[in-house]
Length: 581
Image 1 (cartoon, helix red, strand yellow):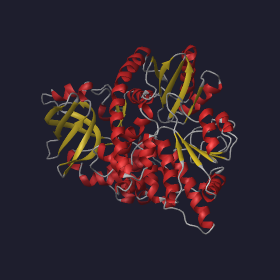
Image 2 (cartoon, helix red, strand yellow):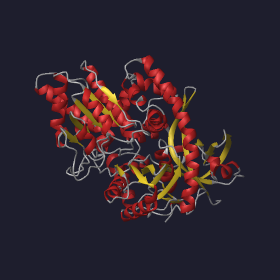
Image 3 (spheres, one colour):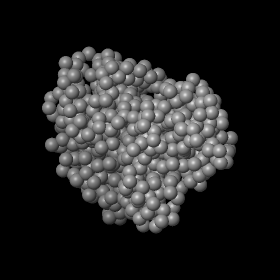
Image 4 (cartoon, helix red, strand yellow):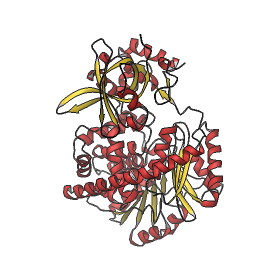
């Protein structure tokens, strides 16, 4: 049964309320742990049991931190890393060009810098070299270095690793194949011979665990390593930006990392926060939507190593120059993305948006934005999406998945079957290269594989609502309590509340497409709301011309800070006409 009987909202979505078992558990949590019902609903959805509320709301990293040695090759990797440090060997870091790769590289550079050592940073060009190690680059690095550390890449790079001519170790999280490259160590929770217990870590999380193990080995040898807690701002940024699930140790890493970031001690993140006009304490949302895209911009359409250099630098002047350049590139990226998004959406709509896979391919689409466009298609359809840009006979594409559907495994299988030139990734994201004459066959096969995992069964119009709430109950204190259940992100969505039968007392169009409203229930409670992109669809016109009609409103609560004043605001996502009482 639809929540509040909303079978089709103004945006065409059916509203779904909590499952019966979530309702029962939330009521039990209210009784056993004496917490407000809205918070209990959020915790029940996360599966928090009676008696475990306090532990969940105050996660301790020391309690959740896994033993690094539970990962294969970890002791070997840390020992080889320390040998390079002790013997003053030449170290190169080969990193992916995204936030996770840049953060992973910056972690190593920062740690080594505190030990008085430097490392060569190498990040491949997205267009000229593509993802991961390649033979020419590895040979060139191998001639001048004793150890190459591949971060956020390398697990499938057998030939380039073999060509290096020096020791190579890999710290990665992408899905491994049946065989691994022949090298010193492959530390990867998604190796096929791992149990997957730490499969939710991003590469920066794996690198951090390696540094934990390195510090441990140093202590056992009577030496002292650098402070690792101060590095958690980088781990948090990578975890959120790489859309890693905010569960288990990831949740604790991000919570602690946000506290470190709020100290404003890392010049690169300070400069980046300032150019992004981030004026409040950072939250997971800011990492994913303000900072992450700017770090990524260099790898997408500019110089590939800009983001990693920004994160690693200790020079405020260099940080400011890099942040300014990345901000410019991000603006340019948005313009390119808008054009590709419009073309991809039109093509996908013509093909049909109800299949297990939504995909589009076009000539000359910039490879640096196809992943973002795939994310937009996924969000619009609640289905895995792939977007491919062709240049000549081959196309380079990127895919994004939905919860419960492992896209990386399916893409890896396609590559093994010969339908792709290459492909790989993890559960939520994947990259691929495909020949033009195999495009249709590859996408048909991928759709088939994803359908077997349940892709396409969820309605694209479903909007999940956690609970009903009246305006008078939406207080700053409630938001503070809800924040304790965060951070929110992948596999841990922020709570969404429905406000039933609300009267709009104020509406104002902001810019070309946004809408600001105020609403009340007639009993003294009043809330302001912002709906971004409202006039890009039916929400804006319907609410702006409400004529006194009451509406059910759904969205996420947040604190709005303006001129030193804090107030509750609803980030409005959907609405439906309410029956007149």
